[in-house]
Length: 150
Image (cartoon, rainbow, N blue to C red; front, side, top):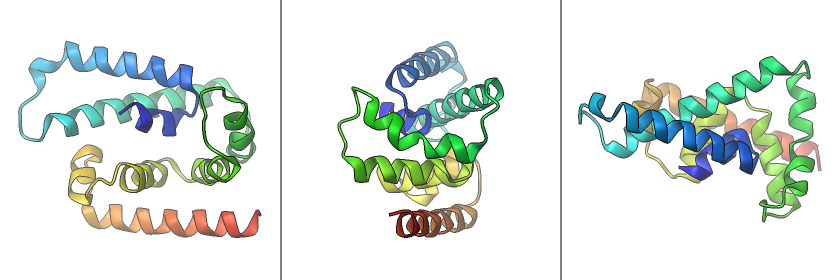
């Protein structure tokens, strides 16, 4: 789950804070877990919602446009002492950061976590058809970005 948070918020220290907040929420509301889905699905939903809330709060604090913000992702990752990827991985993260929030989340869950659409549907509370469309559009946008920004 940490890596899912990290892919959304990008910064190690922020990811730690988000994980701590999400796990505290899960702990405090474990009594509300109804066993209608797997515990991991329930936890993912809490973690993703907390991550997205964090990103929204950060965007409200800054006046930088999302394009300018996404452009700096590769440089930010390469400067992060916890990032162990290469420049190609940083560029991929930059392309992913340019996606709309829903497409970015669907892409990360499907591509990195290899979640089935049925499980993503439960986590994000949306239809599988919409998820498949979002994923394929995200892949197309990422490919186009990487091809045209080499």
